Image: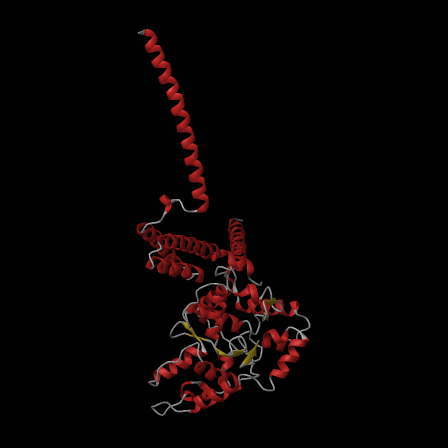
Length: 288
Length: 127
């Protein structure tokens, strides 16, 4: 009898402990980062908001938002404004550094068709590495001065690398490393945080208002926004890198832009690219 | 004698009443003048000194430094700081002080924004 009583109370204690654990994890769940669930929710949000837009078309930004704009994009693609940058980038990519090596020596698959894997989380460094950063590190490792992150040379190089990857599906990995998850979370927080005197977050324009006009421009959806980078912007009359795009967005909301390739910009690129996993690379792009 | 004293006293009393009236009129005139000067913004006593500017600029810079630590500076704050420096360089301490005070107010608003957004950003998140 005594043994039975002990067993019964032990089973009851175990059951209570299991229930307590389950309750604790249920309470903690909302704050635990879940990139897979985030990406699914992100993609569902846009497909529900724009049921007529073909899923793959989101990578074309404002040109995916209605038929007229889509027609404009098709016509634009016949003589694309990024063509000169593409040619320049191809030549730069093949031209050897002073030490005889080329960019191809710095990248997997000689730099061809790899855009969809950037940015990635570098476990050695413990930080996100973007394609722009990797290109400059390649230059520096070969004794060359780094390029400006916001000027034409960097845009031309990334345009060429994006072009060789067109159609490849974005494939960003978050390794099993708490620092990678933290970088992803930091990027997400940056994306949704309001800043600048106009009190705008990235999401104010690209989640709440895609397809709407802001002055003369049509806002692009956040889904697939990285897949088209770098872009030729008619507003700039030139090519622009991802760094330039982030910095311009900041100053448009009257926030002082951060330094190019700061941790925040690298992390927000990581977040935005991850939630676009599965969408094709369409860069280089052209925008109004 | 007592009559003379009484008369003198009466004269003095009426003189006081007269001077009181003058004083009252003068005070009223001063008040009106002060109001007009205040309304037109040319009250001489409010002219800012270099010391006022320096104090206002130091306060604005301190607030902007805090905003920088929060990674949330505003372009408008920077513009007001630059305008304050420029006006002070030209010796216009009224404009310089006003711009520095504006910069401090903007910097404080950016600090408030960064602090309140620490948790509030989650409200915008797609879930």
